[in-house]
Image (cartoon, rainbow, N blue to C red; front, side, top):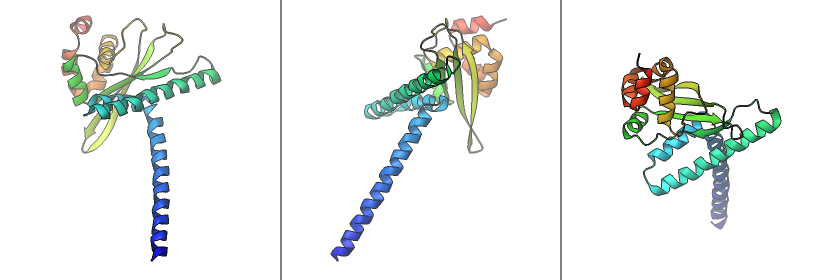
Length: 196
């Protein structure tokens, strides 16, 4: 009987070791994904949607680690290949406007941008991401564009405002069926700039 118990305990220990190894691999892959344009944007959205303070703190720690990983990765690329590399990566939170925040969350619009920490006068490259559910499947719509260094870029609201101001036709292609609703929610100055 004790041999059977010992065997079962050994099997349990081996299974626990396999589980621990699988969880380490999963955590590493999630960390790598969070350091991509889509991953860092999705990470920020998870923080915004967190239900509890404990959950928000945990997600924030993971997000900050991802931003540090992305910055270290940028430094490595820059050291290896010089200044002609894509910039470091940051996520764009929704922003303070409750109407825009509701639209961004409801329609699963997220964003990130690449910047050059050592060249603050360089335009930033924004990537907007939208998850679209069609016939039970989820597709991703993306739009990349550059925002001049002198324009504010602290939130998703800033990014969408910049896209509307700089390239209204590209915003329409990205936002599709919600374009008019999104434009109506933008700050008045952005709408005034685009009027004929």
